Length: 316
Image (cartoon, rainbow, N blue to C red; front, side, top):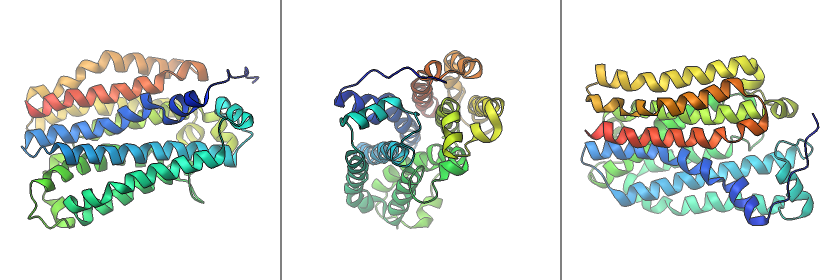
């Protein structure tokens, strides 16, 4: 398929719109943190500074992973026009592989600078959560065997955004108010069980953001030898996966209300169903890259709004 030449972008546009991608990275990083915030408010363990520092660290890791994904794409597959604007910038010299590599490193280093503070509060578990987060961000596309290449990104994203990020956000606040706790694995077991469950809808919605990208890029991924769900199961298969995760995300609030002891307010996120339907209809009917480009940020904001409404549902 012949692609039109991309419009040349300024250096700032390249870094902000295409690499930093705030309409994508900020909502997806913030959504699970909001769920952790809601749980902390419910249990009267809200600690704003630890929560904010933890969010900053997770967002930096998330951005570092995005930078590294693009770095590895341009380094390993310079002839695959997955992001033609970046290829054009590389050829024009407004973007360099060294600059992208250094930006990746800077994100992980800056995230690491929060470690002494977070470890001082959360102990060994903060180290463990940080290592897991950094590894999931870097090895998505980095290292000798990127897990995205083997189709493992779907379950890893679901667990990271639906469980680890939510539990980590709650844990660092809980530890800030329970300084006598040891900070070992036993303290994680002391957290309410709901901490590991309530974020699952957001985990599903954030995973769907990635699935939209996989649908859009499936031909490029096949060329690269990546076995994403879109490549492995085809367009119909990944659309079914998308819909299954969507149904899962919107069924769980009813489960929380009817069987897990939350008030009826917990179903408040269902108000986003019309928004979710419009995105799902586009994902299941559109096939062109240009048509799907706007769906990823919309799906990111869906996860964010869902999580914000969850705060009300959890605390009421």
